[in-house]
Length: 286
View (spheres, rainbow, N blue to C red):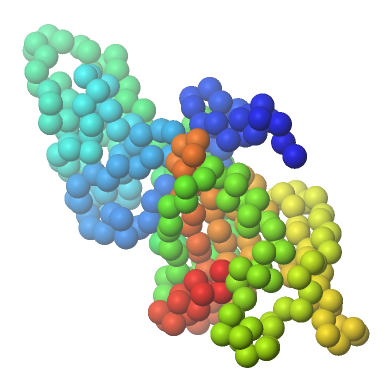
């Protein structure tokens, strides 16, 4: 059981928190691709690790990600105008490119050089598998985007959903790593009513293995046939993923919005095109 101080250490999100310092060093899902469906779409607000950001499309299909509040007077760039690959604040017209450079300050005197002295916070993005990932850490420490198998799967073989959770990210991960709840919460109660339980052992034995990516989690359940055993293997992958055996494999990302709310992204991929029935089944099995 964690103490309050230990819990705060790994759940509090702010600029200088240990959690942010760690999470910023990884690629994290920031939003779904469908939340920015078209080029030149209006900027979309993104809250991630307590940071208020805006995402927008560039002409070549890439996604820009900037701090939400204008470096001039703090106005929200959610209301900015998209001009080419730049955003122009509607308050005093400051214009930013995707790298945070200030290109225009129309309300300043002609001799003003303030735009050469200000750099607006900007972040790198990478779009794959229906998600837009973001790296918020130091540029010189940026990791190569992970070359997971789902990043190479055909688009039609991948599905991803997103849901808001009213808890911190660690509570989400802890619940996901708990295989015992699967025996009850995810039972088919229509079958239970008919006297046909799916899993007979409600108290699995646990084994864990430390790995270079995090933890491998093994839950062992007895079966009615004592010569057999049901082995459920899942993995905690740093910093906030749990890989679970839904279909072949499904990945659940628990991304901190702030101290008390979390985005959960569920990503799955098949060896064939995904149907809506597949997505519905995956959801019903949780």
